[in-house]
Image (tube, rainbow, N blue to C red; front, side):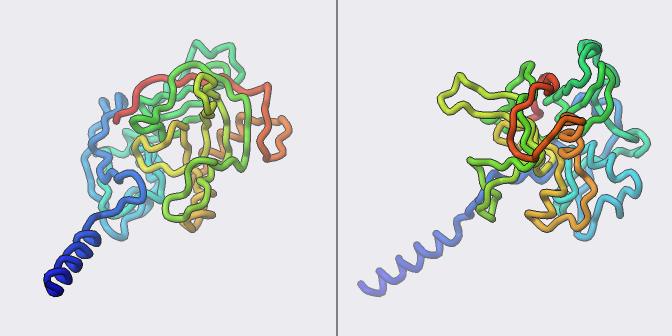
Length: 266
């Protein structure tokens, strides 16, 4: 009898240890499954990254464009991930799917257009595109709301009061935060922000709009070693402009309009 109980206990312990445990959402390891309207005019092939691969090693001076084409940051350029590689890299030179002009914003000194279908953001001055960046948007069940909004508050060192950094347990940094919407129809008044975060190449946020922030990644994850991509900082400084900014949360009256449209690929 004792032997029978011992065998059962050992079997149960084995089964517990055999069950996989996920600290967060399941990771997607192929970006080739996502279709964007801007893919239509570009021939590409799917390539699985190998150990030792890096954007510069594979694509030279075109590495930024390949990452933009995949809506990806350098920290997530990892072995085992499959990415889209254009057959002719010149086809994605200075890649952007955002329109060069947006006539409806011609009267706006500054205007932000977020296209969730393309997972891209465009910054406009009097209807003319001045720069654009890939973004991470909300996953299913946590979508970014579509509609017309306005940046009403900024917070250079904003951090989440709800979500921790996976595996570290510290509040998730949302640096260079630009608040564009507070949903007062909900009891908890959830806030929606544009801010710095990881860009894994697919919808992953809890409802905010994320831009590449290697400054944050180096501080939190110690990677990459050299900061090159600072999309969140660029947008933040453009919004604030010459206005005073103490780096802390404060409301503003000069914030640009934000138009969010489209549906993410998943």
